[in-house]
Image 1 (cartoon, rainbow, N blue to C red):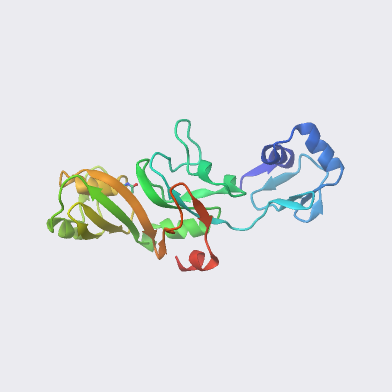
Image 2 (cartoon, rainbow, N blue to C red; image 1 turned 90 degrees about the vertical axis):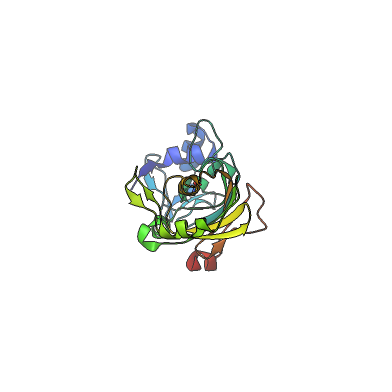
Length: 232
Ligand code: URA
């Protein structure tokens, strides 16, 4: 597990300089895993519980967040050009989070973030076959032929794979709801590409049993309830 030094952690998390941190430690104001720590070289990791002046600045609690990702924000933790999904969060401990299943830059909707890798691995593991629902707006009219083609799967030569059966519902002439149990590179755009029908807008509305909260405007996020974490 990745370790870091206590003084570095305090400098970064509390925007302090080295002198302040040294003083803070000497004044016995820093507690790591329940014990007062005077040692600035002490090794910590993401599970260490760190308190300063009686307030928890890092807990070992699992954190689960849903975000309504806007178009133009990148599903990454760092990026030199675009805003990232992490930049949009206001929650404490956001630097410990990772993304559970990315969306393309120009796709909007439900993105999950957590610091619990067991949970995210279970959700993203191919064997789990967790359904993900997308609302898709197309440039040209849909026809019933799409339904069977999505159900039968499409062969992608580049990866030498056939897509797993996907459900396509026609909502209106130009709007489909697609449910995938996997997430290949640009999968939805490429599947509609087979019909020479460009995707004009793509929005993820659901992962497993968890629907994007209607109360979240684009760019907003909230912590998942215990029930949501368990029943997803
Ligand atoms: N399929 C795509 O083409 N893009 C996404 O972001 C998700 C699924």
